[in-house]
Length: 423
Ligand code: SF4
Image 1 (cartoon, rainbow, N blue to C red):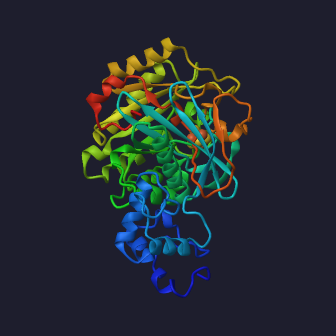
Image 2 (cartoon, rainbow, N blue to C red):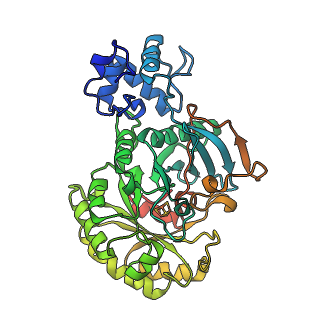
Image 3 (cartoon, rainbow, N blue to C red):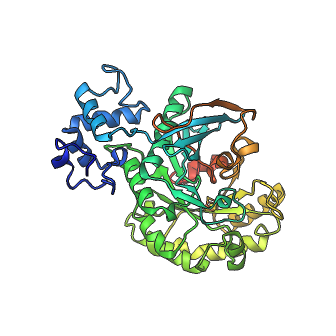
């Protein structure tokens, strides 16, 4: 607590996001606690009105839209104790022909993460894919981020900072409104439960980021059956990266798995059953399809048989097929279009909603964690800007599945309007 002046000490006792070193996580502080810090709900509301439009309440000119009063600003600065409000800064931005923007964001400790903005002009919206960890310990065989290992978990503020920076870019570039957030960047939500829970709560809170619960998708490979229970308690839609119903194949693709697919599926079903409203039980099940490994009709049939029992609990299940994006893993090849189509058609014949993602983003760096692991060369084409590294200004990056996360069968969206997958 030594970082606080005596003036604020009585106000801070009991704040729920007070860290061990006495620094408040102001950006993800529950609204009631923020009101204490800023000495009034009006100032707290003003701060979030500003953040929601992508304006930094500390740098917006006094008197301008979203600007805090001098007094509120002073209170905020005092509570931050020299730390930035926004914990990541955009250090690199790339733009693909389809409009997808990759953002490399630098944290205050100099580490880099990725996030991806994916606009859909057809549906007049933008989706942001955020990272939850620096690296990842799940080691999925097809994933570049998995080769990094886990460097550290991101904080809830670093996750929400990615969203703030995404809002800034969307505003600057006049992109469609940022309405959808997918936790599919670097890392696994199920391995950073506390920070992800705080970030999701902040995003879905009407008094803070105020995003629709149905537009927030929390993705995990499912580290354990119990992990689903914690994730299901968060106000978002769950996405399970299954990759294969067959245990031997899944173990090859997700070598860190310690549970059978049946154990995980049953854990997911039990977790979904705790949600009283049926519409909140909608889930996405993702499969990265790799030629000759998990893309046969037999694999599709196994998947259908495996997933069908879950319909008893989750009446809407979106099967999300992701043709492997070649990043030169020996033995892993993208399946042909025909094979992917046949796989999809088989699942549709079984009555499932099933979509295929189309690649969005720079092919050179569109795989999971590419930007963060490649240490982008300044000469790389399509690089829009390279800002100075260092936290505080805003930034964000991702790298998981999200950069190519566009369902090809977009016309089906109308029929499954509250399914979460359609970016
Ligand atoms: S696919 Fe996701 S869970 Fe698997 S290693 Fe990559 S980042 Fe981690």
